[in-house]
Amino acid sequence: MNQEIEHSYLPIRGLKLHIAHIGKGEVGTLLFVHGFPEVWYSWRHQMVAAAAAGFCAIAPDLPGYGLSEPPSDLALASWESLIKDLLSILDSLGISKVFLVAKDFGAKPAFDLALCHPDRVCGVVTFGVPPLVESLSRSGLPEGFYIYRWREPGRAESDFGRFDARRIMRTIYILFSRSEIPIAKPGQEIMDLADDSTRMPYWFREEDLDAYTNLYEKSGFITALQIPYRTKPAEAEYADPRFEMPMFVMMGQKDYILKFPALKDYISSEKLKEIAPDHEITYIPKGSHFVQEQFPELVNQLMIDFLCKHA
Image (cartoon, rainbow, N blue to C red; front, side, top):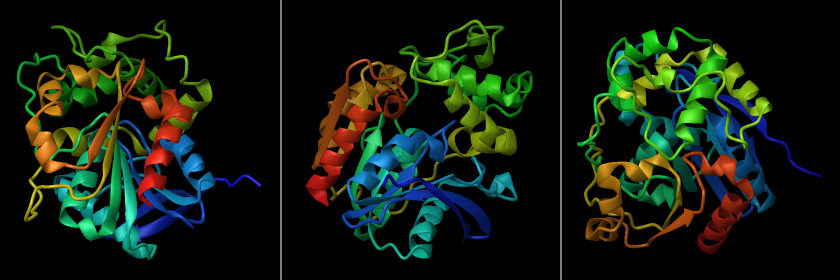
């Protein structure tokens, strides 16, 4: 009988956080950490595959995302709090050690958790983001760069406020699945870069758009924007900025992130080899920023092969 993804709520550090979970975990446990604008649903294909391979898969909605409560005061939201949230989820469920699977901004709390608490992490799988101990420079990108726009107070509120949740999600999936960095021209906003006549990616179905829309109609977008774009990352405290566990990175060859000026140089640098001596990077042809949803069968196989090798 095929297992189905189940849903629970946990009281985590004063908030009620939603988690999706599946699998008995005979082989091990995976903790999935999403990015923006994703939620637990972004990992649906990987969760089912992991459970079929004998793992327990757990995917929380981070605070302010999906079905999880937002922080009562956005000013108190911090990157450090995300590390504490992930640890608290593991402690609440009685899980001593996990594989972390993360993408987009979710890679930062995953990396920090692996560095600060290496005894809790078996290995790390990331999508689109190589192992990092500090932020890469974004110099050379113009004023219309989406991160510059969304970190500006009131800018996203005004831009997003013109549309409903369905249109916003549709536009973001269109823009972020392209190979070009989303950059608005003078007089434009980011949401103006696609309209109702622009086709969605072929692999993003109407039912997927329905699922995201339903969740964001409940949560809204502004709280979700706080951590990745409006909260300054503080450097986590760790004695040795070096990943001792195995790490596996999947990059879509068409991911716009590869056009960030500093990323390409970093991936081939000696610095990366020093901080993550046991890492490998696989490039997926035609893969986009959402490669785990675009090519789930290939991604699942690569992920499971890595996990089983190190379980």
